[in-house]
Picture (cartoon, rainbow, N blue to C red):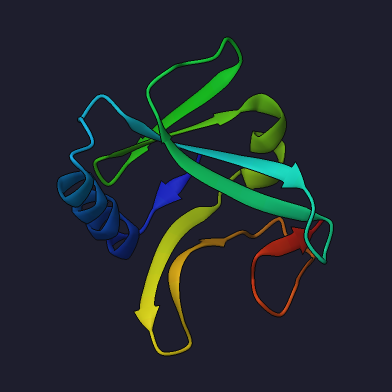
Length: 108
């Protein structure tokens, strides 16, 4: 399962409203090679399903990931911070053994 915190849900709703993004678009999350710890998160709006997609809905937000990425993302919560220590979406990932200082990449 992938989870969506209230903070992330609010920001997704704001982005949809401000950007004129239709309700049939969902959040696509994937894990790609890169970053200082080896793996990085990628997140976009999408409206095209793929054959091996894993589909979750939490807190009114539909989140989709490919099967390979889901192995790294299982039980991860998408969150949003608007504070002084950094603004943006981030992933609270219990599978990450370590993260880089900027929080953009991780390792398992």
